[in-house]
Length: 461
Ligand code: ARG
Image 1 (cartoon, rainbow, N blue to C red):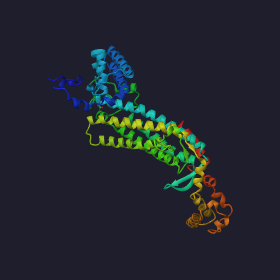
Image 2: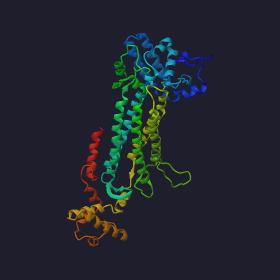
Image 3: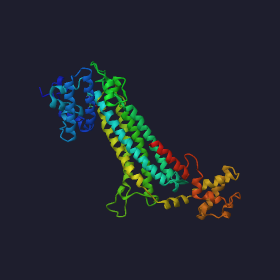
Image 4: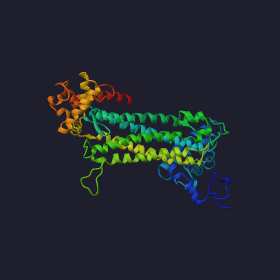
């Protein structure tokens, strides 16, 4: 009979695991990231077991001291992770038994790795949701600062990427802000359902020991207890919900990135990004490439992929735990890392955006951005909107042929198209007149942008 390698579950086995199978099924290379949550969970479990009389106080103390020392060992980089011990849970438990002897083997009373891993990953995700929330908040604060500074800066607003109507740069930034505000709501919502404790469900059916799940919940700071043991060990909805939120947030960052890439190009020239967010080319000396937004745009793909990966992982899994579930971690970890890194890069970069106000203004002046304002002016003079549209269309046609913007035409040139046009038309044809006229909640007028910043700041704090 070959050596039974795994002393933690090898009892019923008559030969050791195939070397390759051992490596193939192990998760320790990636799940060791959850060591702190695993130890927190074990300390809470041992504390509760002593309170209900399953462990003595002395056993509990030995376990807690041993686990605390193991945490230090890991943090000093001295812990020897072993693939033969499969995962973070069995590595830590085996080391505990090494250190404190037979008492270490009592820690696993009344629990299973199935409820243990489900608890660890929720604790890990909640910790990281909080880090993500604070980076989101930092980015949103930076965006509001820039929006406030640029509340009256005029740029073209686009539909179909064609100049549509003038807007303020502050207003455009507040559109970005709204996307992130929704992401933050989704993050908080996902946190609620992650914040439920599976521990106590044991392998799938619960346990025969007189456990106090409410006490363990309280010790770990969960909001609630999972209500069904079969569901608790198999549910990974929280990971899917997080990835859905992350994919959408990355999609928003990607849209912002796309605009930053366009705006930094020589063709637009709307903004400069400081050199520290760009890189050069090894062959073209003139180049300054907007690498940070490009990379964020590119990284969106992997997070979208992780969402599909997790949905597909869960599809068709029968209750309760299946080994498939071990595959939840790498996509979730990478989604967290990618989102956190992208938010951090954006939070550093956005407040440092340098707008080229003259270039933006000139771009808005070209392209007949105030054509709608002229039509609205004619409506105020009593002309039906459809007729006004037709009149302005002809004026624009004339402008294209004569290479003149509406605001460059003389009164008599404009009156060729309608004798309702008077000298007061020039107020509405200016860019400032156009943006200031959109003076209601959600409109682009500089005063509205400033008021929206004030409201948003109250919401954030
Ligand atoms: N490493 C496993 C995971 O990540 C832990 C649970 C394993 N449980 C089991 N009965 N094989 O899901």
